Length: 397
Image 1 (cartoon, one colour):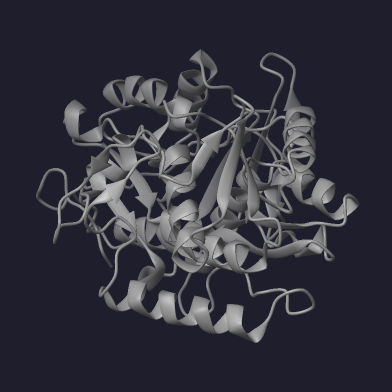
Image 2: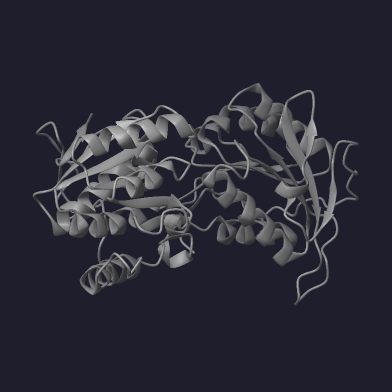
């Protein structure tokens, strides 16, 4: 697996002691999706659940290891549902106990949730939202014997803690492939993109750029119009943004936001779309061409297994298509073509064998400047935390 190591530390054998039981608000489950059995806690307005997994088929249940997960929303958000399902799958595969906390805002509540999980005996705690990072770092400093992981963040390399790392993946590879499909499908040469955040967020901006470059690779005449909602999860704003883009003449609607509403709006208008997080063709079968997908269970399984085996290393994790962490959903062949499939397959093969990187070489921006160097590829740190520019065919509306 490809991993970018921030600090090469000696492998740490975690102390695995008898774990404390959960509080009275926890709901115990056996082999059941924790989200469906969550008990609401009145104080924080959040949900909390415990999963007691059965042993994996090829091993006995592991004692002394307990994972805790903090999610920004719940199963109603496609982003968080992806993480919830991945956590359940990984923990059940490894036969370990786990706890989840859902609907945890990007504020002090994240710190409190992390502390509660640590006090409940969790020795691996994971948070899934960008804005959780500062609060998870605060908890990591107070619980040095607990390992903390944070998705999509950027601060592990500057904090230098022995028990905190960031996890991310080259999701832009999936965006690029989805852009190829959109670029080949559009008839108006106007493609819409509903983005949760603007250029201040490198994850969103880099995703837009990768998608736009995928579009450009097959259709240099097409433009990508972007509407920003300023929220990761806002059904109303996502709907309104999609409607606005459709009114501009866009006939394909892509998204980096957490409801299927942009796809539903595209379908309602008789147009097409590209989903995110889950295969949204289930939501909008007449519109969704494909969807950009994460598979966080690959990461969870890898990291928790390191703890189980006593081989944990505090290092940043950066996975990709070859690791099974990133992909796109199967093309919806009711509305896609064999030529689209061929183009995707060819590009994907080059990404996986390393002969092509989305951010290779000199890249032209939409303000007439260039970034990158001939013969070089933007490094992962820049891709995940330093992209504040848009590719040349992008317009923010």
